[in-house]
Image (tube, rainbow, N blue to C red; front, top):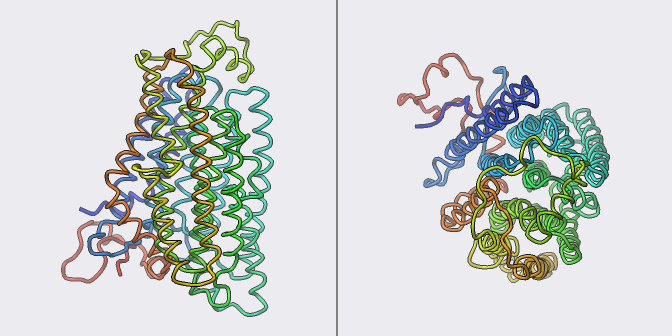
Length: 562
């Protein structure tokens, strides 16, 4: 049975309502807030699964489904629209899969180191989910700002000199990104008279010669905002310090934020400047491809130079983001759907691995330094007195025996995933990108960009393997004592590692889904038609979710199937 159309708005409403309820309670009710947050994340995961089934419900027939939700029932492109397609459903699922383990991990004590952690966490999820679902640039700006405002509080959560310094740098850079975003949106609206993404895609090919330079300048400003968030070189210097200084659960959920920037670049790049954009086709694609490859190189060098796992993982975020941006640029130029399929699969797997590495940094560091050293370092970072008694114990639950073996196995899985080694999902994603690039470069002469990407992709995996194995041997193998590992910290790590295993076992249906996602992105007539032709939701349509066998209308209001 097809889920009702109103389910599309739930990924925004659930965290909004949960966060608002949490603000009604003071900080003495942290356990209650944590419980509400966990319920919210579980509900979001269930909704994300239902939405991905809806978006790919007819995958066996090869049909792409685009579902439009008209807020206020105003027709597109005049009203606020939420658009669900394969890519947005995939990103919603990735967000919920990472958010739930991160919040469980925070329940081990991290949520008590500052105020309003749980509410900020929910508002962050609201902004991320809204950015993935919105169909117009104005509301993309709104959700972008909600996401950034919540991320400022989460990064500064716990205080401490190092964290505050990195946090202020992070805030300054992202305020610049927000300013560029606003300027770009204003120029686009002034030039075209619309901010609806699908409507823009129909107007850009028909622009006059006088207006086309203006829309290119606006796109450059808008891209600058999201390339800062996606951390493309040379706009990425802020990320390793900021993500490395964040609390482990915050760093884990922050691994999603660069994917928001990459998502918008892929969505707008292929939608507005794809092959159907006329004289604007491929605008900025070469810069995107070269910048993505430069980010891969810079991140690989940063991984080799880093000495702690937090900063190392921050540089690995750059490698993952650069890979996705490089493939997006090549896809805009050469219509490389097979490479985009592999990149989306690798993005999902690598994000899970990076989130797990952020969570592993604390217990492995505890093993390396000893519990006394850990408490002193933690107290200094949080600006606390190590001699001060804490009314609430930091660790909850029972420590797990054999913690070193458990941490070592989880760490090894993460290494294999982010380095792209067999037999896990990271290898399958990289193999898909490599095979697509080599096939394209082998059949067409002069494809130096593809060959450069192949070399950088292999070298980045090699650098990742060297750096992580070196650090793992020093931290896990050299010290045989088991660190204290509460269940609340071990469980989310196992959840992320288990999800990587599930993604590997179910690689065939996942790649089939992503292959149709990539095809829909490179041939976006379905998205444009779904947004521009969907009728408003009338009372008769809301009376029943079942399709009328006597008509040829889609299964649900606003749903288009080619």
